Structures are given as C-alpha cells and as structure tokens.
Length: 150
Image: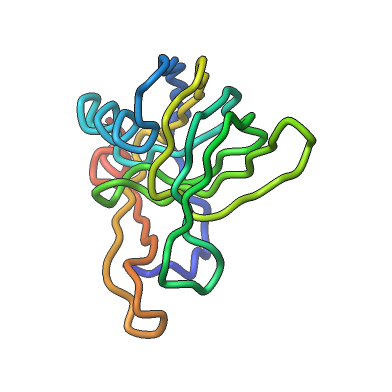
C-alpha cells in the first residue's frame, strides 16, 4: 500500500452514534462495535463523557500510568479499524481543570461516553509493522468495492 496519497481516497461517510454506559471499558466496547459492524475505516469523530479511571501510555514511554478519576473526556481521537484495538489518544480533565493525556490503554466509563464513530465506506485501514518506527502504523487504501463503484 502506498501511503503517499497523490489523490484523495473517497467513500461515503457513515456516522454511527454509540453511547457507553457506566462501568464499560471504552477501547474494548468500541473495538467490538467496529468488528460487529464490519467497519473498515472507522475513526472517532467526537466524544464527550466521563471516566472513573484511565491507563495511559505517555509520549515516548514504554511504561503505562494509572489515573483515578473521575475525569471529564475533553477529547478522544484516533482510528478504530485496521488493528486489534485501534489507536486512541485522550485528553482528560479533573475537578480542578487540570488536563492529562496520552495513548489509551484502557478507560472505564463513569456516567456516559457519547462517541460518534465515522467510517468511510470504500476505504480500508490496516496496521502493518513499520520497520522505521518499530510500531504497527496506519496504512490505507481504496477498497475493491469503491473501485468497482459498489
């Protein structure tokens, strides 16, 4: 797959509203939703809500940190297709307005998490190993269905 896009990939944008309930783990519920609906290019459009705890990996760190809330979700971004659990980053604020953020390992919903998932029908995400970075990095391509005009 050539990820130096010379032409935009195209496909119909589909939107899926998802509401997570107290006690649900955000990453696993979203990954399950994506598998259940066979979404090939799912990504987070927006999210608001709160969590009781978060396990995050910070920038350029191999270890994770645990945070006990409650916290408001002030931002959740990332891709959900192409890998086992997607690639999510979050910003969380505490009762004093202090913000923490990082790569999501896990988060547990406090009252709600209202997530809008987008999917570009006709685009396919994958996460092959990138020898340059040492991580599974996003790759994308126009799917055969889109090329055939389906």
